[in-house]
Image 1 (cartoon, helix red, strand yellow):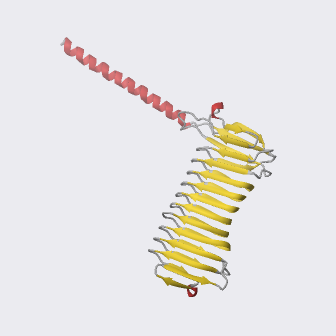
Image 2 (cartoon, helix red, strand yellow):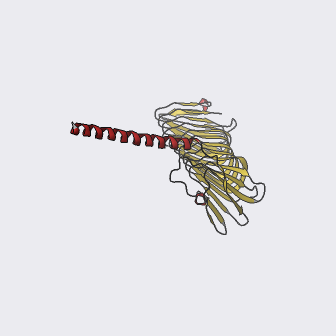
Image 3 (cartoon, rainbow, N blue to C red):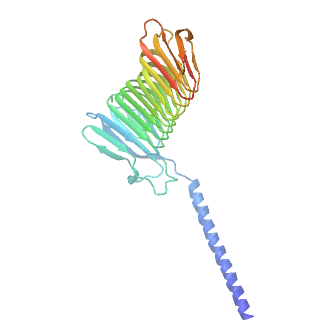
Length: 317
């Protein structure tokens, strides 16, 4: 009897220990969840100011942070870092020499699920040299600016890029899976690169080189010349209001929709393996196997070439 009572007592004690441990774990979880639900709003934690006299290169580089640009009210470059946790080791890493400024993100908490940081950049209108902005997952918003630069480079992996008004000798915009939302872009050389991101543009003015793996591009109005290439899929839809040089379009597994100025005279060629070719100038072209070609007008000033493997081609004036 004593042995039986002893064993029952041990079992009872073990059960009580388990209940106590489980209760402590539950309380810890509730405490953690309670703390998470009361997140601190982000506030200005760090403000940087730079004199841009003699500076020819400015680089702003962050990771997951959203970066928003504004017009500076004076001739200084101002960067404000908003954070939910203010610690100096989270402040921006700054590298500066006589001709360049490079600002990149600082450290982050080891457990960063409750940590938020975003950036405001105030750029003087007088700055007209070289500007580079990069993020990984953060959005880049430059819709408040009218840029007039020597060169502009923007690179985002998965964030959205908003750029309303930019004029530069060299423009290079790239995204892996994020969207390029563009307004009026002017440049001697304009390069657009995406993997699967979408590009929409109100107006392109310059010599365009577009390369994509599977993204779509829609250009409402273009002036100049261009090479557009989609190496896998996606749609190419571009309207030219003025053509100053040759145009070429290649889309492996998607369609091409091209609108040309009504008064343009040009040499035309379209090739497709498993698609159709439709134009508004059928009387000026002939079909030879998979290739459609012809001359539109008496004095052509440009060559227009289109090609797909598995997609339809539509060209109108």
